[in-house]
Image (cartoon, rainbow, N blue to C red):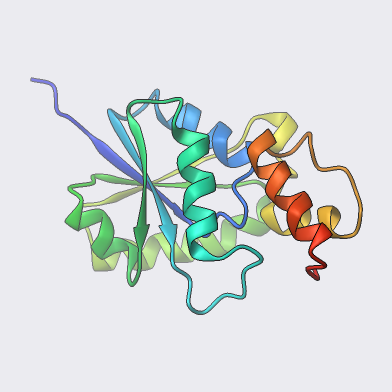
Length: 166
């Protein structure tokens, strides 16, 4: 008997990068449906407003019928449970990510023991790509076109032209 499995990939996505898209593409091979949960993130200072981040994620995942973007606020473990998710996908780029993600997975396991955390590492060309680096490089005049989709690059350039600070 096969089971339909929903996975949630949560994050701030400020902005979504090709590394994020790589994780989503690979998670599609493991799960029937992926919900990319875009955090409203009241506690973080973001370059892009919530609506901008959600729009960019929706544009990035529109190519896949089994992936959708949704907003979330509050505990991600509650969101996953409310959506019928059985797994939470988290990306790990380096050892420095592991400690934080391992602790987070442990807390989420206590809050929602029926939800498994699955760690995926990005493909080699994306292992060093982070939203933070992409934002800073773009706003300081560097070329980030190789790290983000064209629609994200356009928005980054608009922020740069508007005089946003990294």
